[in-house]
Length: 469
Image (cartoon, rainbow, N blue to C red):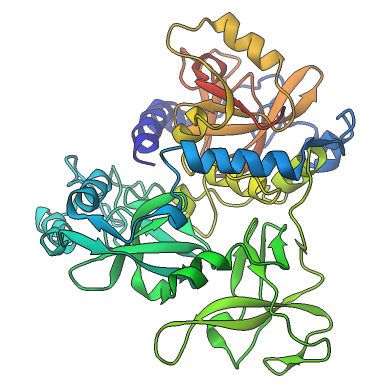
């Protein structure tokens, strides 16, 4: 996330001047730009999954079967340094390692930051945040405890809810926001903040600070076994919510995002769950905080008419398109903020609904040793990049600095992508850069997109990841 921040900031600076000009002067008409201003989207059918699925040869053919996906996931966990195998972690961590991890993420900011009102964040506030890390309290050996996530919660650079930004007036890209964890995610608990309100945790894909109120501690084996239990339901919609219940308020209307897997509760067919018959719903077990404050696995209901399955979706090109389009129009959320997700989170959730795990951040995804990819360095030619674009297939992931897009097909020979983006730009008829403040999961053609006036997205491709044979 930290590498993405710098790269995204550069991109936003490139877009800022033309965006201000465009707000004052209506742009000239450009071929392929409809009245809404998003280039290449004059045909509304391009906003439908069916339009793209119809163009795929053998859309329901399985690209990777369950065994191949399982092998890839094991390879990812075993070889990718951004991933964390909680089951293989030692009983305790050395002080040096804990401090190294914390300092790597929670380094004192060296550049000015601003709050939501546009006011500079005082040095005293930064001092307090550094003190809140409580580095001196880290023991020579820190015994690990384990817990499950109770509700969707933020992963933060510092133990604080304070939102900070790189410039006054910018209120979307919170520099302390790293990612999010979903209900049922296991974590290893390593350290606490000075006020005891935040935990430094190791999750399967990230190490960061999380609110202690959103984690419930439990027995190590129960925690680690939870995500692997069968039978289960996996969420295949963009989001769903558990059924309302006054008996278990913490589990009432609890949001579960795409790819979340929860075990079935194993209740009798005629059983009541929280005062409600379960025949029209799936009874699942979710983590809750028991009377003693420790882990309790409690039943909750998921309506059968909501999108969930008893197994991960087959990895087909049709399913990749359908799953991606379920997020179409969702608000862009840096680091999973705004109850949404960002570009790398978006593709992660889509692929996770088919059982495929990916690293959290774009750079880790783009260069993971466990994934098949085509790399491009600064010496790669434009011709080489464009040849690779010509060979793109549905589901391929295209990386530029700080961003990832998923290929969904071609229309009139033009490659189109779906991506979760805060913006983009293209060249207008007058040769000037035109800005699109998309801030959502969007469909766009790939070729017209510009990284800057001098460079297109294609010119800046660093990697293409192929989740296929």
